[in-house]
Image (cartoon, rainbow, N blue to C red; front, side, top):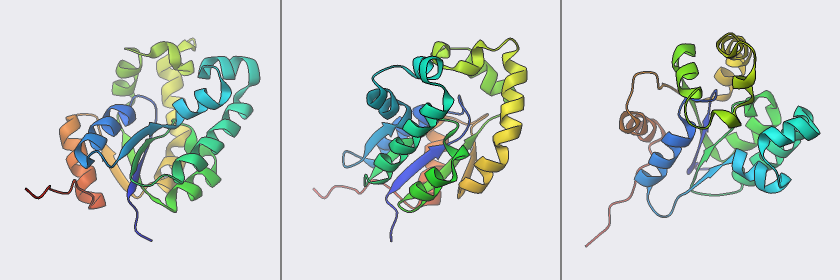
Length: 181
């Protein structure tokens, strides 16, 4: 079965949303861009920090599994997944059936710098006492999950968005069809 969708996985602040939007732009109007975190917020009727605070991580992961199922059913999509989506093997199995799995990585230092910028209020890890130490700890724990889930690996640390998009398009062999005049 040919795969026409692309799933971006990786730790927070590796560029999944930014790259995803740019990638959708290159693939054309027949493609959609979705973020599983936004699907979760819509399903729950509340923000992710509120889900964690009121319902706990287990409930959040239930929402996340449902969001992955919905996303995998879409064709011609670029899907940006939350950083912990790889913790549930079923999520990855579901997505791999119809999608190219692309892992975006960056150094812990770059992740910390990016995460402390815009949108930091939505990142629970940043509210920890020592966020940089926590980033390194969680990255170490999740690394095997990320690696076993991906087919394509791209380090975003020192690359432009355009370069990252080019690499993904080349490796997935997906590209925008040229219009006939």
